[in-house]
Image (cartoon, rainbow, N blue to C red; front, side, top):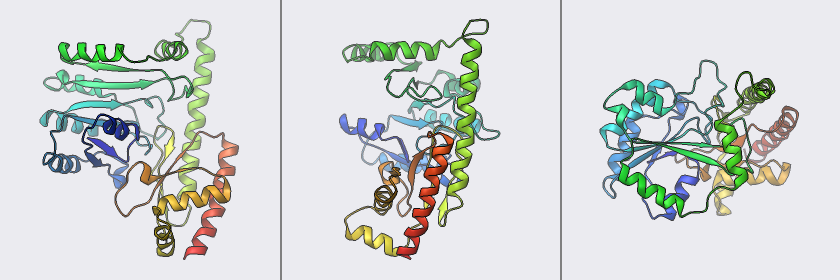
Length: 313
C-alpha cells in the first residue's frame, strides 16, 4: 500500500519487482492525514487482485509537507495489525518540523508506547544523509532500521543487501556523522548546534512564505507546510486551459507547469507525477532556495499565473 500522492521511488521499485501497487489517497482536507476508511477501501479493492502484505507511510510527507499526529499514527498501527501488514516508515525528514504545535513521532516509539501486541509488530524505518537539515544530496548514504523481523527473513534480507553495491565510502562517512552528531562538551558542538538551528529556522520561515504566497493566488489552495521541504498546492484550471492541454495530448497540470518553465524558467513538478485524486491538479515545489531567491521565484510565479488565467478564462 502506497500513499497518493507519493514519492515515486516506491512505485518505481514495485514496478521493478513486478509487485502490485495499492494506492490509498491521503486526506488533503485534513492536512494530508491518513484516513482509516480510505485505507480500508483501498485494501478491500486490492484483495480482489492480490495479497496485500505491507503499507508505506511517509512522515513528514513528501511531496505534501505534512506531519502526522500521534493519534493518526496509532490508527495506522492498529490498521496494520488488524490486516497483518508490514509497516515501512519513511521518516527521513523527521528533523524538519515547522508548524506550531506539530511534533515528530516515530512509528517505533509509538508502537512501543502502545504496548503488546503492537510493540512486537514488524517495522522498517528509513533514514538518509541526503535529506533533512543536512541536505547532503550528493552523498548517497542511508540506513533502514528493522524491528521485530523474523530472524530467517532478516538473514535473507542481509544476504540480499550484501550482494548489492553499497553506498560509497564518502556516503557512509556522512551517515556516520548523521547518527553520531557532536555531543555537549565536544569542540564542535556549539558550532554544530548554531548551524543546525539556523538552517531549520530559515526553512521554517520559508515554509510559511511559500504557503502564504500560494494561498494569495487566484484558484490556489495550499496546506500549511508543516514539515519536510516541499509544498504541494492544489490549483484550479479554466476549462479553456484543460481543453488546450488535452488537444496537445498532455495532462492539464503538466501543461501548466511546462508553460511556467518556458515563460519564467521556474521549474516545479506536476502532481500527476506523484499521483492525485482524479479531477484535481497540483504541483510540488521545494522551499530550499534562499529567501531572496525564493521571493524572486514567487514573484515570477505570481506574474505568470495572472497572465495565464487572463489568457485561458
